[in-house]
Length: 495
View 1 (cartoon, one colour):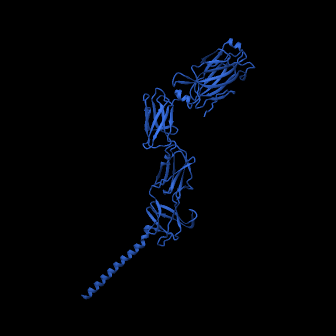
View 2 (cartoon, helix red, strand yellow):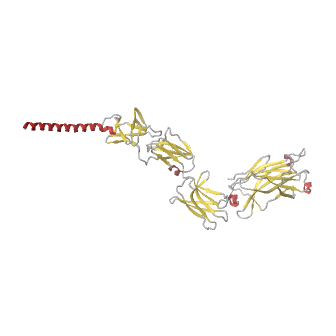
View 3 (cartoon, one colour):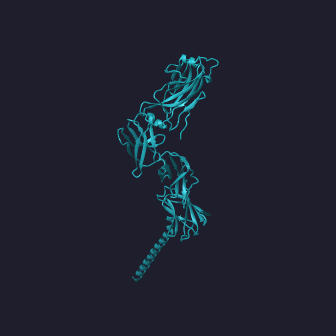
């Protein structure tokens, strides 16, 4: 699509002119110069003196009566292949009178002194067309890509208030014409060929700056492109202009950067993995001692990050106290229960990814049925909320029965639980942490022994058995002592 530039006439004292359009071509000129309409012979020369004070104009002179318009366009002057420069073409129409015999055109760029040229018309020519309008054109102002130039046109001699001004913005290097011919815009073209199995990318280059070596590298793109260490130099006399670079991960911000080996050379970047968002979700870490879960982006990214609980039948439901957070870099959740059903949800635009970092880790706690007995076992000191519920036949919901309790389980310990109703289930959730999943456990039958909903801890459950064994041992010892006493009495009697 062609983007139009403001290259039309200026009808106000302060206009902004520019040029844009990737596929437009600038007009070629062999030399810069000045032209006048009506067959007039114009003379143009640069001036370097400070402008003289302006004169008071005659009563009937004003800017609108003298200058009809002011417009700008882009021309290109070339000395050979890839040796072109941009020229600013200035056009204006002047109403000549006895008191006006030319114009002064001054161009000024930020941080630089003004550059002026005088365009004069001979006295003999002025007599022939006195009172008529003459069109003047000059294209001897050098400009650089994307440079802003302030242009002011005044009369000769200079009359106070009789001026016309405008601002011109030179086209940038997005113009295809400039990328091929202006050294400041020649970046070269990069063609990547990726081999994911070998984690290599073959980089081929073309349209580079003639007679110069070319540098390529892999970098991570942010505000600047930071090198990964993989780089190579392509010599100017090498017939096959390609190199192979190795990478570790195909991240979206991993780009190939290339430039000619000259001072302040423009650079080109190609990012072949910009759609590889799957690689972004590997930086998930968990500190078991601090119970902190965090994720650090390998690339600059604005994403919504939330904790969610994975459902039994798929899906992941956001936790109420773990609302999405927007982050470019690192985000952390403190006091997290590392349960396999607790996951992280990443959302970019309208697309989401689910990662469950605790699936492959050992489970910190669980409710199990072993030897006809329900047990809540924990590897860490933890407090749980246990709620008895009745599952629904029509939905996956489990209705609360009103039977619930809070228990504490020590590290590497367990407690026994009892379900008197074979159709009941348990909702179990850690409450000593900030972020935890609520786990549903259902079993087909009740345990064999009638225990309270929350039994004593496992080490205490062995006390009745110990008392029984102690009683038996004491009984045996007492019986043995009685037998010895009886035997000794009988022996004494016989004697």
